[in-house]
Image (cartoon, rainbow, N blue to C red; front, side, top):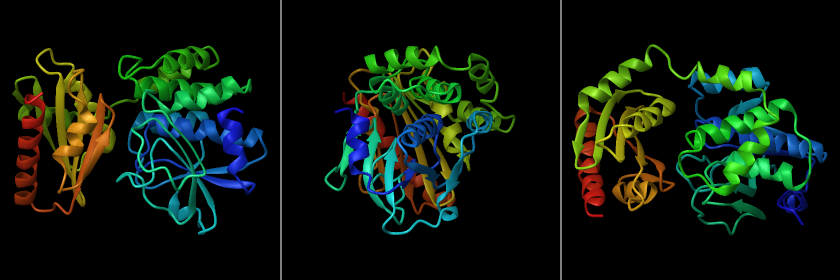
Length: 322
């Protein structure tokens, strides 16, 4: 029995919700879109929903060009007995809000957490992109995919693995080859042209002006109210420096302090470092190569400065100790 067949066995209704993590990125949206198409082929109607904001132009361009429908959670009027399938995140994560329905299944590529409440789960923490897992469902069931579906999955794999250069598994490579042959290469190239806005350059400027390098660790405060997408992008950008193989980037947003971390060191796990660094303050986690975290209820400039200092000290100690 394939994973898709196992999933179908636990779905009891002819309509389900597919929930991404908050502020969904290209991989989360592509995975949800691919799963929606798979379920439609099997007679199950699915609605993609999320909480937060989609604020990166190339993500919005992907949604528009590929005709992907997704809705904010307050638009769908979910009921307690509705069935939810989580993609690219897990129940209990700080970036996965608890919606009204029941989470019956989870498909993800982050480190496995509590799974007892799911009727089905397919969590592969060794895989670089959730889109690769969904592409595998098409492959192992010998199901045709549309050009738009293939394009979405190819873009999801490309973005979450930094063009197959970060956290890549054999499945990612095989599935990227599989979907790329079926994708619209021109659309993929057009998405790349929308990766930055002029206003984003201010955050890059701030990152450069505040950058501190301690050993192989690069730390930058990129200012207030930066999007989820730009925080991660700048973390990747700083990692390209020859002197740096671990980055900590943060921005104060409404309600708290957001962190992005990246690691190119085989001995320093980004997810474990940020989880330990935020213990007692907030929540963090992710992969060995890329992770994120959030501390709530940090509001004044004084609170931001003090909390940032404490986290910087913890991260510096954890990274330099290894």
